[in-house]
Image (cartoon, rainbow, N blue to C red; front, side):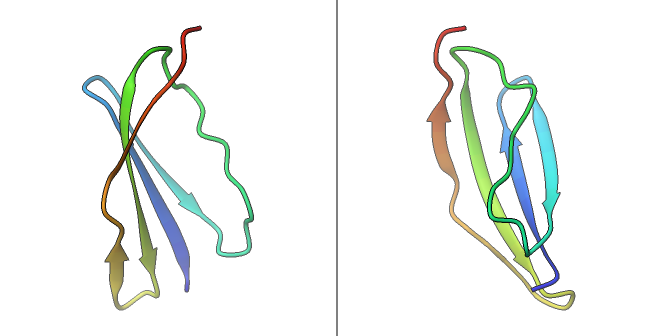
Length: 62
């Protein structure tokens, strides 16, 4: 694995994070309260990519 790519989508926001394979956690910043997001994770080995199904989540109020 060369890296992980996390995509965070909402109707008003798109954020792409490239994550080092050695990382054990990641902080997603700039999220808005009470907003639904779709997240997907892609694993890349440089030649091939595998992308997870999207996961829906909603942030809490403020």
